[in-house]
Image (cartoon, rainbow, N blue to C red):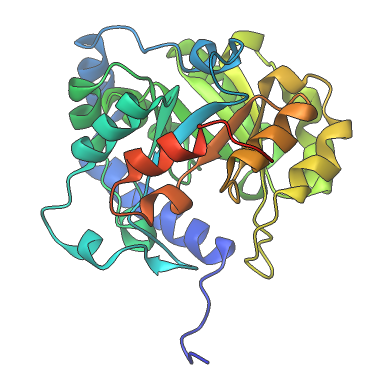
Length: 281
């Protein structure tokens, strides 16, 4: 057993707040707004996923992910400085992804905010910035970086913060993926889903237990009855097979975020194509 202390969500959020405070000193909101003014409109992340799946039971948000605190480096070659997120994004687009997710946190996930513009220049799919958003400054930063959507993690934010971040995201044309891990947080944020406009908000249920770090798709299936509008529900993590997609679809869950199981393969696009291929169950 490793003697290395496990990094908790609280640890990451604490570090992220310090990191954001330092970056905010170097780049003002006004400077970010100027960068935003030179960009076109965000792509419709919500619309790309809520439409009824075509040729697959579930629309897939395919994730570009090099490492995580729980898994470490997903493949040894992802440690190299020449890691190419664009090559992965092109594979996913060709394999049938409906949208993309890109990790941008550096210390814990080896992500880079600069990946987003590179990906959007190469493929036509909308892109989610997957990071720990804890400050309105990051919403402007996300939009300036080319993101079409941002992740908001309920476990990291109180209700007032969630509402403020959702309003600002809507003003900037960004979709929010509001993620919960527990039934308590699902019930807490349920009134906020669709605020301030339905077509800018998705609800994510993350199947990872933050205490044990185990992943179980049944977590979504246990909580689905507490979701008022399943058309905006995203099941995240632990989806590995076509049978998993069918289990979700039978409960009217039509969107899934899949990353680690794809990125473990030498060609993530082939892994996505296999995931989406109908087979006997």
